[in-house]
Length: 398
Image (tube, rainbow, N blue to C red; front, side, top):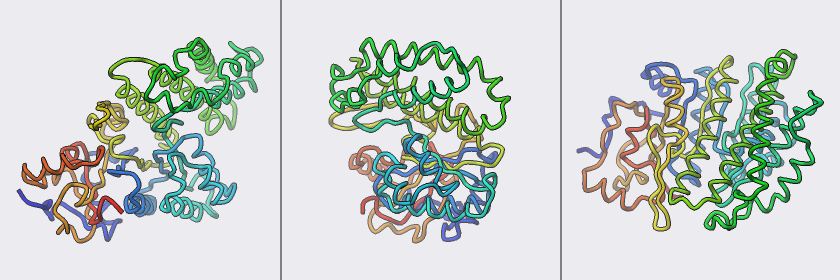
């Protein structure tokens, strides 16, 4: 086996417009959602290349939005800045991202470019920014309070009689701190998810979600609701219910507890991306950027000393639901794949289509790469779960 992919099947990304056009032409159908997965967080080269890819897709392929692995509610602040210039860039970087991604320079550069692109353009022809992650961090998940009260307030503006009153919701939710207790991540007994309040909130949330569903035809007939208010109300409804499901599993004792939590998070990601894609479909496709473990077509897994987990990621759900309208490019580097350093090829970044996704290493080199893999990077065996791979000549650590 060789240490490089067949060069005739790759496109030099020093000319990203040409390379991306060739890659998209190689797909069986134009994707509405194009995933771009980084193998690890915290390496500046990956989101920096994401920016180059997105700019090229906007200018040459009609892409009109980007969705990243960040809190969907926090991202609304970044969206307001991008579309209408609300707030300052410093303020948006502080409050418009989760997971510490507001400190990533490439994210700042992305918002600055999008704002400049939109300046002077009508909103219908501009680019939009989304987060698609629920408000969940590694060690805690948010209270359903914000999403639930947002849903209630929307419905209360239009209907006098609802299945529950606001005071009951506030009382059942209580202090946010009891929901975000990080000790619950490792100790189910510390979770609020099995309390009477949490169980009752799931019933009440389902009641409100059902009420919203019964009233959608009348609401959508009113001018100005479909694009913003109803879309956000539906987001609030599914987020509140999703968080309550998540907290219920967090409080459980199943040996598959971690796998179930990871799976539920990716289901919520899938629902958000589906809503984004359906909203943006009349305008154009969406680029999706996240860790590859969320976007790949096959099952994801974590193998660590302290835990093992297997789950179906958002990419697998999207592939099943959207078929050829979902495509995924995995990003990798020579070091990340375990290739010998210095990695000889490519000297410049290359984008390879699916036919080139062949083993890059000998069996012995592959085993060594897997043994040395940190957490769950873009391993060789996962390349086959992609429609393409963007291979960068950069180290996986900086």
